[in-house]
Image (cartoon, rainbow over the protein chains, first blue to last red):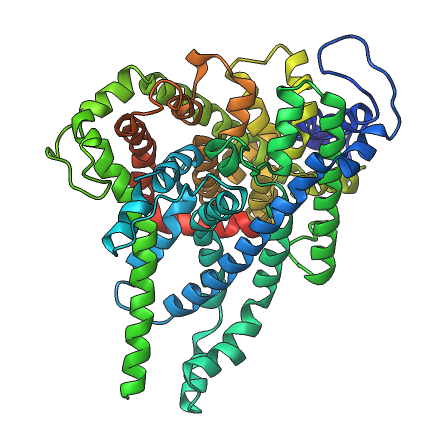
Length: 288
Length: 276
């Protein structure tokens, strides 16, 4: 092997590696370092504070509350996955207007998050879409949907289901359609009905994708940002882990504390991903 | 047989109900965007049709006063550069990793693999300081560099495709005197067209829709992209839902057109991108 031949791959990897290290690895290292200080992000002065920031995250109730908010999104993801499974199963069979329904269910996941936020601010507004629809059925409520913590969080989690259901649905549908058609034909010949077909052919065929989705929704529920930030700005108890971190870092200049929060989130996500890799042996991952 | 018919009817009913749930909020916003301030105030409710279905007045306001024209320009600029860069970076990485054996190959691969597990939202606290130290803060190059540098999914997609290109093609070209760079440019890149289409679509839509990064890195009003410009509608038009609605529809419309034209590619692309 000549010298130039040995150098060639590095010429191709130079730009990708520089970008990768600058924008992914350097931030992680810095973040770890900041998390043990009281840095405000601007001043040249910073003090080492040990694990103080970490202690604060887990002991100050208003900082810890965000984990409870994640629970709403976690429940919502469960609803979302079940609904996505149902629609994927139904639409894998020959249904009239199948492509139309497929498109309608999927389209929300392509829409801009800010636009979705506004669409649903109007939806939940006093006298907005929801109130008008309820009025049609004779229910005249003047409930402030985003006015109390419980109602606001349920509403926002609902928006999140509306937005992301389509993505899960298309993934499940893809998995179902990759099951060989002969299996259904054979089952049909044996007199299996739709429910039996689901239990014995579809369910085992899509288990990996579903498990993957379930696990990903855990880290997804913790890193919710756009919908609550755009719609309520974290008011009325809708603050999530990420909206809170963004505020700590960029509004209150608590870079140290925000870094500690980000490290905690990163560790949780990594733990969840590790669990996923253990539970779902995925042949696509071993690139080496 | 009748039981089957009942099930079928119920299934259809559920599909229609889901379609209504998806389409109703969007339709109402479309209707609202066509109403005049007078119609908004007369208490006729959100579900009524506008008097004039061709009243595009709110769109003119959104475009001109809301700065949506400039926002589309900025977004286009960022999409073109970051998607182009992602294609180059991703395909070069995949080519180097798949076609060469070199020292530290495994650690390099591991570096890319591991990066895919780090969610971008978490590290922005520190990324911000780095972007700032390069003097990129509040320029359009900040999001471009970040979109280009942190996209691991496209590396995966390219890697799958590079593997499926027979090595014999490279060897034949090398016998004809082609060097590694010519092989990449003349053989690999052209054969990667399906992968490039996937990456362009998935990445293009993701960049077009992103709010977080432009919001953090480009606070200047004249650097607004569609997400951040639309977000600013809340202040001045806070009570003018007809104008906010027009802005939202303006942002959704291009997505709808792209979706209708490229449906098949989009479904495939998202399936590939999401399962990485």
